[in-house]
Length: 258
Length: 258
Image (cartoon, rainbow over all chains, first blue to last red; front, side, top):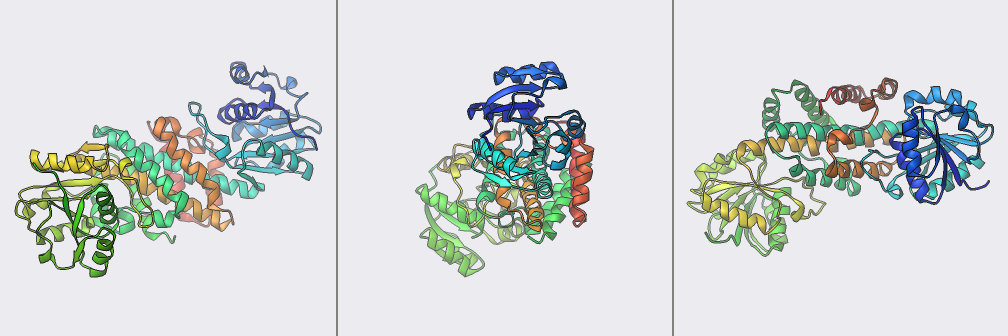
């Protein structure tokens, strides 16, 4: 199986953008960017010296791989429109089955970077786990080599395990980030600066790199300090939705069998 | 006001341990460790070349400051037993009022490190915000200098703001850590390794060092991807308590005015 050198992207969002830039920097050629919105296709194409289009009929051709990096909502619809004969095609979704691409090519798979991407923040791909899956050994080998051009954190994960990973990632990333937002909101109302919490947030994430979350758990709920929990719930009286959150999570901490 | 050099600790838990070691390393003399449990007093005393006792009558004497680092639950009871005339006495609690120490001395205050401490993990005090409060300018100056021997992240915070900080810290630290535990539990059941989430956890905390949690928020709830959220709730069918958590937090993310 030949190595992948020429890459076309379908999609121009956060994942497409970060991945295209990283692959370009890893020496790959980005052939073309497709987006329904021509301005978005153009913007990303400009960053990676690629052609761009908003016409699905102009996507196929030249590339060794077609990377479909669109939202899960759009994925099925997009896949139905694509046909690449036997060229390798992958999606980047955490939750979508690999087989969603069955009709697009004889060779298909998944290339899922387990990370959170925001436009304004560059990420270092060699710290990102890449989860790959393919419908045959040759494609798997190609995807493996492509992944290794970016990171050594490479995982072979089937569709079922991948969606479990995605669910766990929601708890490990999206939900903690929401907790940071709540903290910020509480501080702001009391004219306190979010900056003061930053070292704590960092240390909380650093701790579980070395010790298990169970051993790292601290705080009033873990200690069973009812007086403080009652005080905190009182203090949240202007935020009934945060009171509920506080109660439920504190109960979870107390009852968790770690 | 003279600088603080000699320090006695009341308490031998995580905060006392980390703080005593850090102050010792900063060149201070740790005079004595008091704990109700003599073995605990002895263990910490051994680490910082101090004397130790489990007799409240042997606490007073010699020290420039008495640091009461006990759980909030024990604090009131402990404070009632202590009298240091005019020697400076502080507690290290996030939520207890400064005045809880009124009866212990003419000079009292608070020395609150805003951080999460676990026995097995050493922390770097110069990255820890220290929140101080005192009942008079002289004591405040002494506490300021003591804090500066450990960190330049020094904050003057009154009791009310401090307890707001503590509440926000629960959301910024204890609750995210619980979310990590849930993620670990989900992965373990599916024979997946928690290690694969570690870069994501780290990046999630790193992101908000630079951009606001609102801008950093990603995931199905933020995108309003109902299909994925429904799938995730189905996947959690063996964990009704996590289903509830998932629903409530996702709703929070959707409705949050960031």
